[in-house]
Every structure is written in C-alpha cells, then in structure tokens.
Image 1: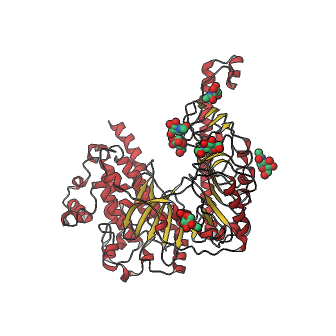
Image 2: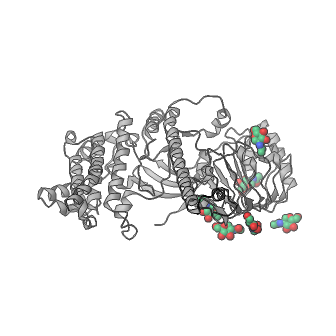
Length: 603
Ligand SMILES: *[C@@H]1O[C@H](CO)[C@@H](O)[C@H](O)[C@H]1NC(C)=O
Ligand SMILES: *[C@@H]1O[C@H](CO)[C@@H](O)[C@H](O)[C@H]1NC(C)=O
Ligand SMILES: *[C@@H]1O[C@H](CO)[C@@H](O)[C@H](O)[C@H]1NC(C)=O
Ligand SMILES: *[C@@H]1O[C@H](CO)[C@@H](O)[C@H](O)[C@H]1NC(C)=O
Ligand SMILES: *[C@@H]1O[C@H](CO)[C@@H](O)[C@H](O)[C@H]1NC(C)=O
Ligand SMILES: *[C@@H]1O[C@H](CO)[C@@H](O)[C@H](O)[C@H]1NC(C)=O
C-alpha cells in the first residue's frame, strides 16, 4: 500500500496577525541574535515587517503578544550564540536550532523558564549545558560531539518526557535518574559503561544500543568480574555456584518488583484520571500561561501530552484510511510520539452537544481494551479526534491478511484472546456509560491489536455525531455487521452491538469476511450462511480450515459458535448482553484447562 505524506496544515486555518508593543523586546533580541551569529541561509527579519507573520522561523502566541516559537533548522548557524540575545525571549516555548554548526548555547538560553522543547540535534556541541530549565519536556542533543559523563543536572529535569542523547561520545556510568515523566529515552551510540540503573531498565534495548561497555536489563547481563561487588560472597567462602544462583534470584526479584511497581503505578494513574477529566482545571499552577496557546485542542488528561493544534497541524502525516465518518491520519509529532487524527465529516450536531458527547466518551476511554481518545477539536470547519496510536494492525488484517506472515498468530488461542479482549472493551463501553453510549461500528478492522495481541477497540460512540435516524445514509451502515433492526430503523442499540459482535465471532470462526465483493450475494450474509449450515447439522463445515488442523480445540469452537449464534438472534431481546457474552467467552478458556487434564487422565 502506498501512503502519501502531507502536512496536516492543509486543514486550512487562519492565524490573524497584528503586532503589539509587547513584542518590541523580543524583536530587539532576535535582531541582535541575527547580527551576532554567522549564518548561511538568509534571515529575512526586519523592523519594517510584522514579526509574527513575516519573519521566517518565528511564531507568536495566539494573541500575538510574544514570540513563542523559534525554529531555524539547517540555517548554517555557525559558532556560538551570544548571551543576552535569545536568552531575552522569556516567553519562548519551543526552540529548534537543529542541523546547524553550533558549538555553544549560553546558559541564559538553556534556562529560559518558559522553555518546554529544545531541539539541538546535529550540531557540534562539545558538552551538555551545565544548567537547564527544570521544566523542559523535550531535550534533543543527539548527533553532537558531547563528551564526558551524563551530568547531575539531569536529575532536575522532573518534567522531561523525551530525552535524546544518541550518537555522541558520552562516557562513564549512567546516573540513576529518577524522572517520573520520561517516556522516550535514547542513549544509543555513545561510550557509556557499567550497569543500566534500575530506574531506566523499563526502556527497550534500542535506547542503549552501541555502548559496548554497558550491561544489564534490557541488555545482556553484566559479567561477574573480580572486584565486582558480589565477589564479597566468594571471600566469605561461599561457592561461585551459590553466588551466581543468588544473583539470578536477585535479578528475578528485582524484575518482579519492577513489574509490580510499574503495573501499580500504571493502575494508580488510570484510576486517578477519570476524576481529572470531568473537573474544571484550577486556575493556579502553569495553566494561565499555557491555556490560551492550547486553545482549540481539548485534552482529557492535560498532564500527559504537550502538543497543541499548531504542532499537530504542522506534524507530518500520512493518510491511513478513508471511511464513512471521515479520513484518518497518522501524525508524527516532533517529540517522537505518533498519534492518530480522525477528521470527521458531515457532523451535524452543535458545539455544545459535541462537547457533551466527547465528555461522555472521555469518561469511558480508560480501559486496557479501548483505544484512548486523547483530545478533540471543534470548529465550524473542522472536527478532529486525536487518539493514541496502536502500532500492530487490526483483527481484520490478522484474520484475512497474508497467511505467510502469521500462521501462529491466527491460532485458535490468539483468536480467542483477541475476541475476549474486544468483548471486554465493548462491555466496558456499555457498562461505564450507564446506558448512554453504544459502540455503533463494530467490525474486525476496528479491533486494533498490540504486539501482544491485546485487543483495543476503536471508533466507538461516534454514531450520534452524524445525526438522527433520518440523516443516516445507507453508506453509513456497516455492511455485513449490521443487525436487521439497524438496517430497518437506522438506530444503534446495545443489542445491535451484540449482533455485530456475533458476526465478528463468526468471522473469526469461519475465516470469512462478512462482506465479499458486492456482486456475490451468496456469501454476503455471513450470519445467514452459518445459520443454514448449522441447521443442516454440518456444524463443523463452517469452521476455518486452518483451525481444523487442531482437533483438540473443536469442542471450544463449537461452544464459541453457540455464543455467536445467540448474539445474532433476529429478535434483539433474545440476544445476551455484552457482559454476558464476555463471561461466556471467559468460561470457554477456564474450562479449557480443566478439560485437558481430564482428557489426559482418561488416556
Ligand atoms: C520571509 O520568508 C518567509 C518564508 O519564505 C515568507 O513567508 C515571508 O513572507 C518572508 N518575509 C519577508 C519580510 O520577506
Ligand atoms: C564556521 O566558522 C568557522 C570559523 O569562522 C569556519 O572555519 C568554518 O568553515 C565555518 N563552518 C561552516 C560550515 O561554514
Ligand atoms: C537543581 O535544582 C535545585 C533547586 O531547583 C538547585 O538548587 C540545584 O542547584 C539544581 N541542580 C543542578 C545540578 O542544577
Ligand atoms: C549513529 O548511529 C548509527 C546507527 O543508527 C550508526 O550506524 C552511526 O555510525 C552513528 N553515526 C554517527 C555519526 O556517529
Ligand atoms: C570507552 O570507554 C572505555 C572504558 O569505559 C575506554 O577504555 C575506551 O577508551 C573508551 N573509548 C573511547 C573511544 O573513548
Ligand atoms: C536510538 O537511536 C539509534 C541510532 O540513531 C536508533 O537506531 C534507535 O532505534 C533509537 N532508539 C530508540 C528507542 O528510538
């Protein structure tokens, strides 16, 4: 498949511009800077032109009172930046001077209190700045000439989320940094040595590549060398065997504690968040400075993301799907995160209703089997939904994609795991919304998968945005998955979700997509086909040939088929609830282990 990369800015937006007196000091600072550092590409800055609209690389706050962003990538800036130039831009939030020839950044710049993102990758900086603003979210110093140890100053970066130091010449041990918000770390291709500290062992090995003297989780275990701390055991007469046994147990314990710790932390965060999303933000703290700039995007969890509409629109993006609800993009943000942006079309409801509906979706979004909605944006011209990006494909591609890629992935166990996860996610939507939200668009391509095959339900709860029954055009109906009453009345209910889920189970059991090509009516209605075959008592004929290779699971498949059949009952009242469906699937897995034991005893 070929994707086109294009900037999201094409969502044409207008930024009005008029200069005010507050800008004068920023203007002076920038002009002094331009005069004091040599550069190759021309800076077309001049007093005659409006700083906020015509100065290359400069962007202002939305009220055009201060310079907010300065980005001069690849301008051939050479040498040092003088103190008292950029350091005076004390409302600056984003500074990007990547791909230049800088050898120094003065302390008054690196400590600007408002600074959140500092991009200095691909320069010739010889050392890490001795002082840094403790409120930085992103620091990129990769591809420089940094030497020496990672300094203590990093412990002060309590707000840091992304830290990039790869491809430098840093040496010495990695300090035990306690950085609670750190999500992206890259220390690859340096000359760091020693054991990776506990606090950083949760990062992948790609964060530490190319440091030949570095060891410990997630890299290979550190060697036992004489003079190593643990050799104390040997001097006390304990054999090497016991010592290494003890160390393995210790390592296992540490891993176990870490896993528990991370899980708990994760859970604590999750349980805190719903409260936050519903309440109005307190005026204290940093919100006053940030609020006007964030205007537009409404975040559910304000602490965890630091991009605004402008960042989003300028991110490079690729279109990953076009559906009846609009177009979906994958957007790559400058801090290294990827999000999914859904641009809705034909939304009929008003702003207030839209906001209320989003609030409702926001309340149910925190569940491991649901793709979280991070933020939304509403204007007359555009309605955007911003979601977390789930990297590993969908249930649809798993079932119908290239068979070469994953024979093992389409095993019965994997399918049941995905189905159970999806059932939990959908049941959560039904239960948590207290009767106000249905999924309304259940299909295998809307069940996304993590690399561990945990199902993440997406595209939920959007049907009401597109208006009442009459406004619903036939193209909005999810062909193949829609229950008879949806096709007739165009109303989505809990029970129509259950029907669609039943079709999904049939799809997983038979390996057939509910809709083939439009011309082939015989296969188009999967439920009817299955019902007819089952009536004729050829039950096992319906199953995916790939699954039938394993006779042991046949019993489970028949039970799953029974669940699916109850879901696709024609009368909504006869269908179980999603919670009951979830329990029944859980039941299959539980009795499975019991049966195997029984079978072995009889044999
Ligand atoms: C400076 O360059 C930018 C980008 O090329 C352009 O948008 C802007 O109008 C220019 N400003 C002036 C004063 O020429
Ligand atoms: C940067 O400036 C130095 C000294 O003025 C000069 O030798 C060097 O060639 C310049 N580098 C580039 C890339 O222009
Ligand atoms: C860290 O911050 C504290 C207070 O904010 C300050 O006193 C200390 O000097 C800082 N440490 C470094 C290494 O910058
Ligand atoms: C940077 O890292 C890459 C690995 O991606 C490595 O192959 C390369 O040699 C490094 N480049 C420099 C300039 O150090
Ligand atoms: C890397 O560090 C090791 C010791 O940790 C040292 O022996 C070696 O010389 C260093 N290599 C470079 C290229 O600095
Ligand atoms: C870190 O940088 C290296 C070299 O550029 C790259 O190969 C690696 O994938 C990066 N690691 C992460 C976690 O992004």
